[in-house]
Length: 226
Image (cartoon, rainbow, N blue to C red; front, side):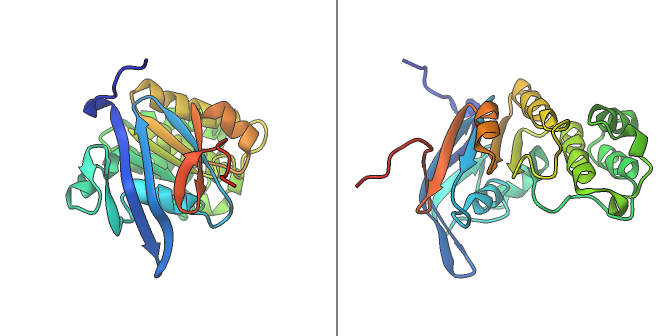
């Protein structure tokens, strides 16, 4: 029998969470826990609420019912702002300044987080973007921007990594970078929540899978009651 999860091991705890977006109920009584060192894959139909769940975990959306804690902070309260530096959300739109070069973007983040500029250069090297470091973000392909986002995660060293469509824009030679980033987060005692339509790859990355169905999180292989 597994040992109980202590409060210090908990990265995410959502209990009976409901979320409304533009007056439309999206999440309905969702319960989910994520512990330190864990990676959780999230699947579901289009519009089921996968991206909404990530926004809740990023403290960008507050529940209208239920309660939740992320990195120890109660959602919907002022204390959630304090934990945002420990969260990295990689969404559909790159979090890069378009008129800065890739290197300038990463070095700016390094300064904001108190890291050496060399750490930014090392992150670009690791994702294979060092030769393109002086290219403006607005002149980069979608695949390059996605790799730059992964470099940003490596540099920021978040405790909670949120990946929306983790493999989008990456060619076959870059797919393995997602696993590298997730593994590094786990090795530091953090956790990852990963959304992807590529279920075979997602199952390789995740310790377990959940499906967003009818606004709730259920084990991905659970049968729908007749």
